Every structure is written in structure tokens, then in C-alpha cells.
Image (cartoon, rainbow, N blue to C red; front, side, top):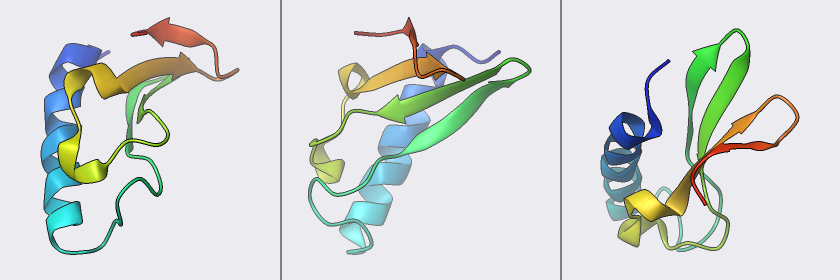
Length: 72
């Protein structure tokens, strides 16, 4: 399983690139990545965060029930 500390910078870069092209407006939507397939664990951005200003603290990891696995 890739740790959140490794995935967050990649999601930040993707989020900024997508935002700069106008494909994600301000705080709409979320960015996520699969951290582990079995059992499923997802890294996902917080709601309400400007996608052009994402930081590592804007991401958490959740399991298949939506329970926090990593992050705050």
C-alpha cells in the first residue's frame, strides 16, 4: 500500500494542473487515488478546498466503509 505521504503530492500536482486548465472550478469535486485494492483504501481530498491550493493536510485515507484510516 502506498502511504498517503507519497500519494498526496501526486494528487496535489494533478489537482493544480487540472485547475489551471479550468477543468475543476474552485472548491467543486474531489481528487482521489486507490492506495490499496484489497482491502480497498482510498486517498481523497477534503470537501470545500480550492483545487488550485491543495496541500498535504487536505487529504485523508478511508476504507470501504468511509472510516478514516490515515490523516485528520
